[in-house]
Image 1: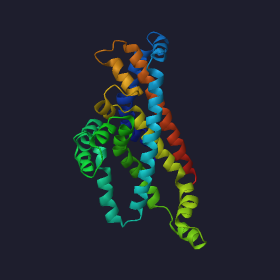
Image 2: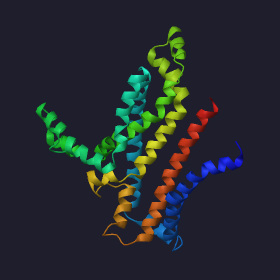
Image 3: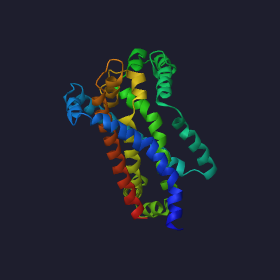
Image 4: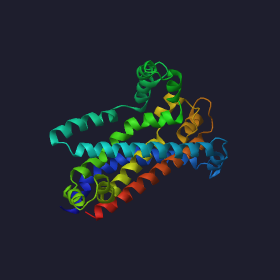
Length: 272
């Protein structure tokens, strides 16, 4: 294919990226840098910035780790199923990706809130509904709710790799005396570590920058950077340059996480 044809095929994607990413980020950068670096200094000086950064890192690590582990287990199970059955279950697994963060939050409130269905069911089995209902509105509950739409992303990313994995290697390892767990740990995991790391970085970037689920579940009481940004642009906030600076910092952090994931993925591609 000629280079000119490549440019024509890439043009729609370039225009889309420029209109919906480059231009908005550039507009935010103009606001953030309008006062030089003073807006960034004010962000660093905010009393809630460093606790919010710590909270975002902790939430990202916990939610991404849980989602990656569960998503890998689900994808491994699906990869062993017949193709028709695997396709059907994959559609069900991918369903949460169609919901927004607010819908997910309200669904979890109806299911696991103080008067939620599962909360009342667990109360009928002997648990304390007050404790269970309160747990949803904590950082742990937020990580639990976020995993609902993070796990499908891991499954969809790692499933093709597991489907195409040569299972004869596991059979050989077990025939030489390895247990199924040892074969999984020493044969499968090293070969899928790169795409698994890519999937981890993907969901980590998603949860680091997400605010809809957190805002619906815990309001602005939870100390994470997206909610700190929301407080700067809400009705009580007036420092828009500082908000733009914080938005750029969150964007840069998510871009760095995604770049790390692409680096892991490129390692996998080079070894194929």
